[in-house]
Length: 390
Image 1: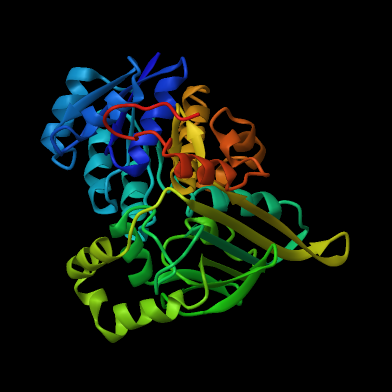
Image 2 (image 1 turned 90 degrees about the horizontal axis):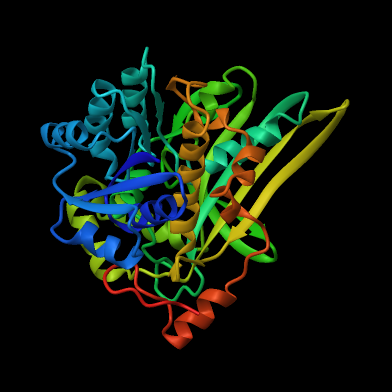
């Protein structure tokens, strides 16, 4: 069994540790800086393959000391994006495989620089967007003789929106503000350009439901660079319910909260509830030439909350944790095949979907499970005492 260090016992780290700990191949060291946070998750899992540790993983000395004592082969960072360069430095110095969930462009560039010449792998952006959406889009692009346009669209939305933002906090608030406030990568007329966040507003309809989509930062990952000079148009936009973008423009631009992100985070976490009843929408559209004809192909999927290890987990937890676990699993079960920086689009969609963790991306899910469990009070506990869901 290989030892994997998971940093952060939050929404995503909790499920990552459970998924890896439940299989027969990995032991997990779950770390959090808050007293009792990792222990509560471990207690809820009830697995002897997951152990809890408490220290500040953003402290390079503390992290190095832990690595040298407990000797994991791999580190998965579920920490806020700004902590990842420190983690990557330790991974390089101690020869660990490194994986993270960041959407931050600058952090990814720093990780890539550290990965140069490494004999272990460095795989940032292992979440949903960037991450799985890049893998899905890349698969479609390979079906064309010539690619003209690529649209990547992803949204994690409440199933039952009932506030003015038509939104619930389903993942990192720091990450959400970061993608709404930073410049966005895009390809226009064959050239890589930066575009403004919260702009490029468009309407999109999926299965008869209208949504809006707009520019957000980081979701394109390294796909634009990989296809440099080979595609005319490529962009990433976040999917939300109609009206959300206008409200966020008011908050971030009109009220200047993009310049005071600490205050904005406090406002959001006080006013916008969390929920397990969400839905993740994944939409990739590619146009180009096939056999001398101009055609379009799409990858469209809706993923709903599921029960894992007797507890209900939100769709964004499922998709993000399954994404990184499937990538980690592929690397660790094929040792020595890859090294250095690895982009998400270097992974095959078929391999991801065929992986034991990638199965959570299967089509055909519904909101019935989450609705029934919430109504009966049997969702179970992701932390603390475990209560089995039926």
